[in-house]
Length: 75
Image (cartoon, rainbow, N blue to C red; front, top):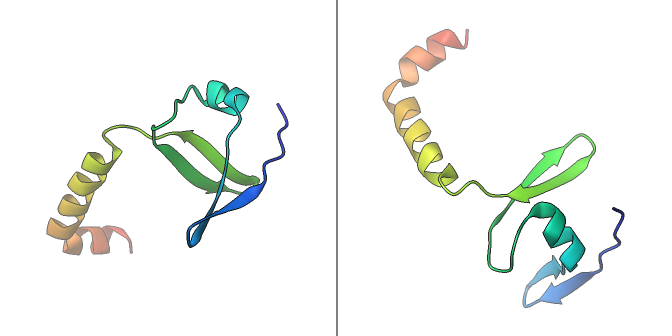
């Protein structure tokens, strides 16, 4: 699939409208959250994992508690 998208102004921000074919390819629906990842080839869009933020919060807590150990391991 090859699609050209136009950037439009949305308030003080900008956005693109995803055609229904792109949403179908992503297996996404209106109102769902997408994850954006920068890759060497460009930007990758995918459905966001529902528990990603909870996982990141747990990881940040462990990193904060084990800061010295992680610093030693990084040497």
